[in-house]
Every structure is written in C-alpha cells, then in structure tokens.
Amino acid sequence: MAPSTGYAYAKDVYSALGVDTEAAMKRLAKVSISLHCWQGDDVGGFESAGDLSGSGLAATGNYPGKARTIDELRSDLELAYRLIPGKHRLNLHAIYGDFAGKKVERNEITVKQFQSWIDWAKSLGLGLDFNPTCFAHPKAASGFTLAHQDKAIRKFWVEHCIACRKIGAAMGKQLGSTTVTNIWIPDGMKDVPVDRLAPRERLADSLDAIFKEKINPKHHLDAVESKLFGIGSESYVVGSHEFYLGYAVQNQKLICLDAGHFHPTEMLTDKISSVLMYVPELLLHVSRGVRWDSDHVVLLDDHLRGIMEELVRGDFLERTHIGLDYFDASINRIAAWTIGTRNAIKALLLAMLEPTDDLRALENAGDNTARLALLEELKSLPFGAVWDEYCRRQDAPVGPAWLEAIRDYEKQVLSKRC
Ligand code: RNT
Ligand code: ZN
Image (cartoon, rainbow, N blue to C red; front, side, top):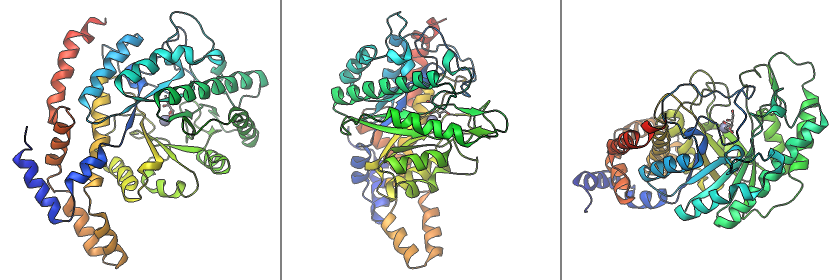
C-alpha cells in the first residue's frame, strides 16, 4: 500500500523545517521498549503462595479476565506485541517462573524455571529483562529484605539476587541481547526511624555480596532502583535516590529511575542528563503517579514527552534501557500495555521529529523568544500522519483500530476466564 496523502503532506511540512520524517521512522524502529509482565496479572506471578501485602505495591481494580497461568500471560502478551509497532522486549519478575506446580524457594531458582520463557522469547524475537522479587514472601513480611537486621534473612535475599543475576545472564546469552536485571527492594519504615544509617550500611554490604561475581556485560547488566516512599514505608526508605545514586556511581552500575519514585512535581526530565554524566547507562521505569506513586497507565503527557525529548536531544538512547512500570487492574490489561507502550513510542517519535539543532542554535544565540515560539508551533504540526504511517509500515494497527482486536479477544478469550 502506498503512503497516504496525509503522510505526504506531513513529510513536506516537516521537511520545510529541516526534519526528515523517513530518517525519524528508521531511527524509531531501532528502539525497543521492555514491557513489564506484571501488568498482565496485577503483580501476581506463578508461585502458589504470596500476595502484595507488606510490599507497598498495590494494584487496584477488578477488571475481569486477568492472566492466571503462563500460557494465558503469553497469549495476552502476544496480542499486545501485535498491536504495538516495532520490536520490543519483555521484563520478567522472578515470581513468573515456570515452576510446573513445584515449590522452588526463591534462593534456589535457576535458569531451569525460565527456559520456557527464553524459548518463547526466542521464537518471537524478543529480548528479556529480569528482576529479583524481594516482596510477596514470608521472609519479606517485616518489610525488610536486603537490609534486614537478621543476617540469615539478608543472606536468603542475597542468594535470591545472585540466582537472578545468573538467570539474567543466561537469558542475555541465549537470546544474544543484553538482559538488564534490576534490583528493587521495599525496605523501609512506616514511622520515623532513629537509625537511618545502619540499614543503609547493611544494604550496601548485601549489594556488594550480590555483585561480587563479574558477569560479561554483553550478556548482562545490573541496575538498582530507588524510591522516595511506599505504603507502609512513608517515613524512611533505605534505598533512597541519594543512596543508590552514590552506590551506582561508585560501582558503575546502572541507575533505574522510576517516574513515580520522586516528589510529585519532580520529573525525570531533569535527572537524565545529570545521572548519565556519572553512571554508564540508565534504566527507566516509565510510569505515571497520580498524586502519589500510583502506577497509572502512561499517557502522552508532558512528563513522558519530556523524558523522551531528553533521550533524543542528548543522544542518550544507546545508553538507556526503556522499561515500563505500571499496573492498572481497572481496565482491560492488554489495552493497558498497548496504550502505555504506544504512547512511549509516540513520545519518542515526537522527539525525533523536532528540529533540535535549530532550537539549540536559537538557545545558544540567546533568542529565547524564537525558541519558545518554535517549540509551541511544533505542537500543532501533522505528527499524527507520521505516526499512522509508522504503524502501517510496522504492520501494526493504525489509529484506534487496535481496540477492535482487544474487544474480540475479550469476547473470545478473556470472558471465559471466570
Ligand atoms: C516498586 C518499583 C518496582 C516494582 C516492580 C514490580 O515501587 O517501582 O519497580 O514496581 O518491581
Ligand atoms: Zn519501578
């Protein structure tokens, strides 16, 4: 099918500003986004026991049809990947292993429980990312894991994280695509602590033990994720931003910035260029907090646009791993993946269609009037026609047509999961 007349017009409009829409689409096709498996089942996973209590995480809503088994989750994901233009990745949590009805302790998991995921990912051409699950477990019930006072409990979680790095490395090696394993722990206190230091010292020791074994960075990279507060850890979080930024700089690990893990008026937009001066690479958890770290589906809003603009303007895409992190149980879960991921890609395309060099020249010349004028005019350029053309070329539905596929699937598949 030939490009639409709408695209031909858009191409001309952008070209008049010195922007090459063809080059932008080519560049966009190279960016992969890591879809978070946990949107598919409200962070449930496939261990028999365990819930989110004590973790500070909460998926609200009871929309019917959530995935209950590995096969259901994979089938749901396959639909989402068909509705999203481009080649992407899957981000797995340790509790999503293929346990085949057997109980495997978290510190004893191996690649065996993830081989079927690797095979599935290979068959679809997906890369995988990974996360230890340091919550939803009796040994995390106190709200402490890697920073726990009890050495035996710390040891258990250290072993779990070591096991996860090995699994992540196997994923990366087998798939020929680097796996990022991200450590996030809930450790913190509901009320004002007296000793803020000792838990942080314990966390640093645990991390040192976890990262002791060197792993080929071609296969595997480590990231650490900070947080401002959680439900039940309102007064103190051991792994704060300052803690992990210091740790990541000192040890040259990836820092994971989650868009919901800062004060509500603080945006990742202004953090990316700063941290990338000191850490080798960045992991993003693109999320949307509404008044708090609520993990709403990502919108095409100013925050998302600001994040993607930074990655493009600063030429940071090569050093950034883009993951999503939200879980909405109040709407169709496959639609939640589709909406948020399509938005992330749209925001990237918008950024790639910007005449950045001209804007920078205006800024350097002190012409802030023209900078503001151009930035605002860019907002009403025919971006939608380029986006539609990109979806068409990538064999993904154009416009809201993808919703039909979700409605069909809901009727044929999800409605039978009662
Ligand atoms: C929690 C962190 C963390 C989790 C996932 C499930 O606040 O954002 O990334 O959302 O590990
Ligand atoms: Zn996160």
